[in-house]
View 1 (cartoon, helix red, strand yellow):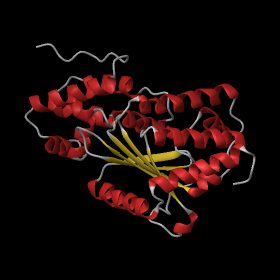
View 2: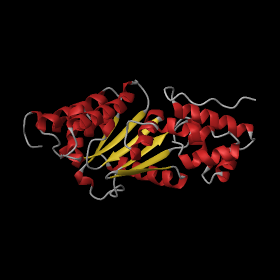
View 3: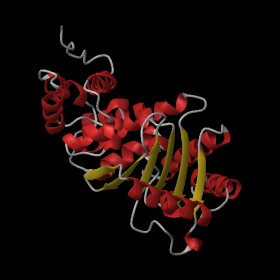
View 4: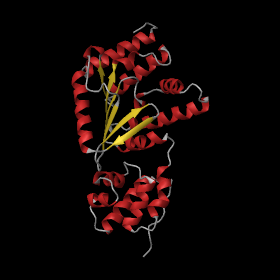
Length: 279
């Protein structure tokens, strides 16, 4: 009987790898939880691999080949599925965003990537490392704009962002850049393409003072939460962690301004920036 064919890297390799994993698991008569025990991961992680929302690492590929008797298929194709234009710590997140049905995010210090304009993204990346060549900066900006194109779809994913007031008042790239960036946010909100709320300074202490967070939900896989720091980040799928961070986000929403008041504030600040007034 012929073995599975190697994947074509040009045709959504993670999805194809996941489909082959499901086929091989079912052929062995194993549940996701049972297979997870054999390769020392959770059953939910196996489900995420099969759904294409998580990236298969080389160690996982090797163990899966051994357990499922797939003749090295996953080891050979793991590299094809791992190719990405994004930094290693963020690549899996960007790929997961594209699969998500809902994204809920809080950012304390800057406008999140999915809401950024090219000029704002350029200023953020330049500040990130002033020594990077302009050509590399432009590649990063293009990658960020490519991610944002998922908002071209009229209804999905649901994007719900809580912006800290500090992110709106930190002048990034100059006042003209800030005016354009905030106008872009209001346009997305008025098109009902994003739910945007502002966490005002007046809210005082709040549930996410430890930093930014991003929660992602999927149609056929368990939810994920992403934590990010300087030059690093990690995805978590532990149900207890995801539940706890969803509670944190719900508390943020309760502390934030209403959508109407948030939109009014963002529009007022955009006007202030456009007229060269200090907001």
